[in-house]
Each structure stands twice: as structure tokens, then as C-alpha cells.
Image (tube, rainbow, N blue to C red; front, top):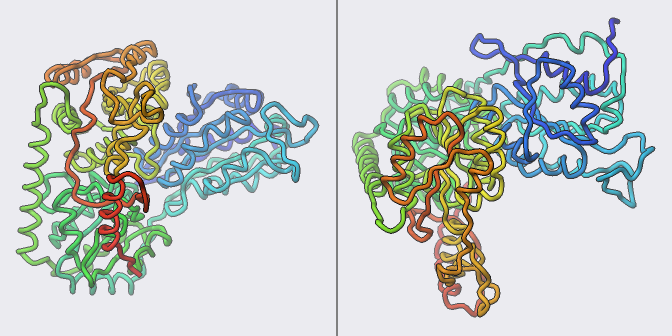
Length: 625
């Protein structure tokens, strides 16, 4: 057998460089680059291997968490057909990736982590940054990745790569099981050489199968659809990953079944389509909330039915409601006691379009849906056109961005009050124009995610919308965007604190406790809440902070200033941050419920009142088995 002598790290990089994917007749590399921060746990191993070869592009990053956010965003915009690698040193370098790694798995996005680890030989123990255990030497901080990885392995011997690397690819490319894959790499093993079989590095072309559904299940699903009076489709992220938007459009045009969208599914159908009810669930539109309560058949396509989608199990109130779940993943397909139509969304919809002959919903139902669509458009316009002369509202900020950016541009967000408002208000015109990380809703994702999106689609303008609290979590990838000449337009909204949780706190009777960025109230001692006067707010020049990181900065006070800045930013060839302040109390109306427990007993009358309201909502919760 022909063999080639390589270090473990060199072998991993050589293998990665020879993994290809074929989709729609087009063959391309699966891994398109590697983010990294080098330290003693990977500089002489993976770092040296990347340096030595010339194929895998290396991206220098500022924070280990943000590099994984960028990689996840990259995979999402690519519909999971490409991925990035992330490499770190041991200890804090590795564990800094855990938050974002959890997000990638929750959102079903492929990311490969090459995490540096302690010495396998144990001749240096405890190594710098090693966690010691008094009951086992076969443990390190990298074991923390096990519950959040779809595949986890520690390479203690070079020959283990021969069985591990194919498993890495199997999981990363699985439509049903993809997520974070972690290879824990002891630093001494990375640099150890071994005579690997040459065939391990032979070019491998992987095909992602479109699993077709069981014929009898399709027949049963058609019977359910034919008997329904008020069916409703819920489009989730799987519609996009399967590239099923065209088949979905054919299906709704054929049947006139209305559609609502999750955060990940938004953009499956254009906002002004007459079948479109918009956002579903806790942050749903008025029309989607109404129809979901009345519907007798929910057809979930590529959704995992999070609590936001189901309004904490209160969204579907028809006593005879049934569920048909179209999903590649058996776990998600089985939820809510559904008829499980397990298969690729595009393949299933194609079969439904062929087999479902003459079904159309009643004209009165179609007419009601169309009316709700038009009524919602008026509500959105009113929110977009609201003008407060003293301070901007978040709704009008969203409106200005939506009106000025181009159809193919991408909006990015993740955490705070913005996602819910964007879910309701954003008029999506392109399937990839709306990028919300809401499986984990991780603060700090926005700028890092925007960077990954820009890497994936450099010809689109990427608009990052971020609040001040999330900006302060992870803003340093502005430097990376400057370094790599990847222009972002960042809309930084200063709410003087945690706007979303402030609102939630008030709804629970807790008066915004702990959510204001203010100096300590010496009378209340532990307040930092909405009772503090505006004069006590901490004044931080976030615009100047962004300027110091290399961004071009435009500061705005009025709506006209903001419109002008958005148009100006289009002509600036480097990352540009637009700064403006926002009214933390002005909110977009809500039409549904989301469960957050309220204290059962309290000295505060406002909390006791909120608890009574909470119990009233709880009465509407249902289990669908």
C-alpha cells in the first residue's frame, strides 16, 4: 500500500482540501476556508499545516466565539452546501467556541471545530490552561463540547484519523443530523508524524441525497389535505436548505393554502403574495395569529416548532386540529403528534404537486387571507411612517432600512427586541434577504454573522442591525472586516441598555429591573431599571468606539439624517457604522403570547397582577399528541 508521511495536522488539512460536494450538477469544494487564533495548542500543529499548504484560505479572527458565528452564518447563506473550519488553542481558546458551537447545532448548521487539547502523552501535566481532575486523567475542557456536538472525537493516535475523518464528513453533510462537529486534537499528537495511506487523501465527491417520502404516507397526507377546511402552511428553515421555494410557490398557487413563516423560514414566499400571512407565533402578524387559531390542519415544512412558533403551545386552538410535518429529520417530523412525512422538502412538495389533483381551499377562505395580507401591509406602512420628532422608534428605523436597501441585499440580526420587530415588519423580497439567528438568539452574533455572510456572497450588500447591548458583546470583528476588505453596513441602535428584556420585565411586573445602562441608584441600591432618570444613564460614545476599530462612522439624530446616511453608505467602500439613538419604550404591537414564568407570590402589586394574566394565558396551552 502506498503511504505518505505527514503530521496529524498536515493529514487533516490535506484531507479537508480533497473533500468536494456535487449539487445540481455542479462540483465544488466543501470547505472554503479556516478561521483561527493560534496559541500553544495549535500553532505548531494545525497552524503549521495551514501555513505549509496553499489551498485552504486562513482567516485571522479576534474572538473564538465570533469565528464560529461567522462560520455558521456562512453555512446558512450557502444552504449548508459549504462550510468553514475553526481552529483554536487549548483551554480558554477552545471553550470560547462553546456558545457559538451550541448555536450552530441548534440551528442545524455545519461547522467543523479543530480544537487544541492537552498532551495525550501526559508527560507534561498539568499543562498551561489544563483543567485537572481528581478522578480521571482522561478528561479535558474539550469534553464540554460533547452535548452540543453532533459528532465528537478525540484523536489520541494518528491512525485514528482513518476512521474519524469520514465520520466528520458524514455528519457535516447529513441534512437530518448536521451541526457542530468537534475534533479534539492534543497538541503533541497534532505534530506527530505517521505514514498515512495515500488513498485517504484521494479526491472525494459527496452527493447530498434528496430522500423521497413513503408513497402510502403521501397518499394519507393528501386525504388529510382534501378533507381540511382551513389548512395553513408553516414554512421553516428547511424550505431554504432544501431549495424548495419554487415548489412551495407552485403548491400554494395550486391549492390556495395560506402560508406563515418562522424566523428561519422567512422569505420562503415574497411578502406581498396573496397567500402570505407573514410571521407566525409569539412575534406573529395579526392575520397569522388569527388563522393559526382557527386552522384545522397545520402543514409544517422544515420547522422544529420552537416555542416562538407555537406561541408556547397556544397558537393552534381549533379543537380538531391535525398536523402534517414534512421534515428530513424524524425527530422534528414527529412533533405535535403529526402525520410524519419524512423526506426532503423539495422532493415531498414535488410529489404533492403531482399527486394532489383538484384541491383548492374555499374561495371565502382565500378572500379572508388576501384581506388579512393587505390589512397587515397598511399596519406596517403606518409603523414605518410613524415620526417622533424627539427620538426615533425602532419601527421607523426598520422601515427606512427596508425602503432604501436593494432587493438582493441581506439584513442580519440575532438578539434583543429587533428580531421580533423584524419578523413582523420586514418586507422580504428575496429568499436570502432575511438572515435571523433565532434558534439560539445569541447576543454578539450580528457583526460576526454579517462577516460570514459577506464572505459567502461578496456581491451582495450586507446590513447588520444590532442594539447597543449586543454590540458591546462582540464588536471586534469590525477589524476583521476591514482587514479582509469585506464591507458591512452596521446599523447600531442605542437603546441605553437591554430594550427587549426591559419590555419583558415590565410585562412581568418587574419594572425593567437590571436592564438600564445607568449609574447605581443609591436610594434603591440594586435598581438599574426604568425608574432611573435619564441623567443617570452612562454616556458611552459607541460611534467613536467603532471608529477606533477602523469603521467609517455616520452619526444620526433625525429620520432624514438616517435616510441620508443609508444612501451615503452605499457609496463607501469599507465597513460603515451608522449610529442612532432609539426610544426604548416605544414598541411594535404584539398579537400573541410567549411563556416566561411570573413569580407566584410577591410584595409587588404589579407582579401579582402579571401573575393573574399569566394564569389566564396558561389556560390556552395544549399538547397535541
